[in-house]
View (cartoon, helix red, strand yellow):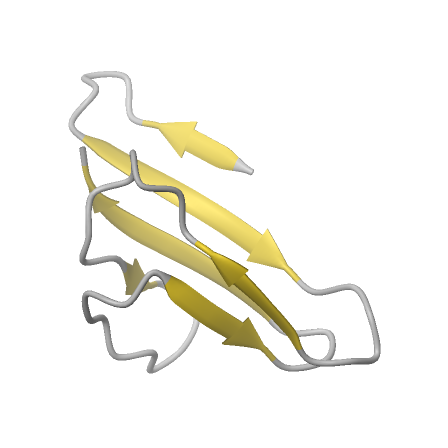
Length: 64
């Protein structure tokens, strides 16, 4: 799920793993890095591939 601020300067990308297995995904190229997770101690970097543990979720906030 992607939500953009009303002034189009920030976005939150909410990703959820509803399975009982680890899942990896790639952040689309049109999303500017770095992103900071609002729910954990995830350390942002320039990697576009993220792995989620079973039932984990991340709310990734960044600038547009």
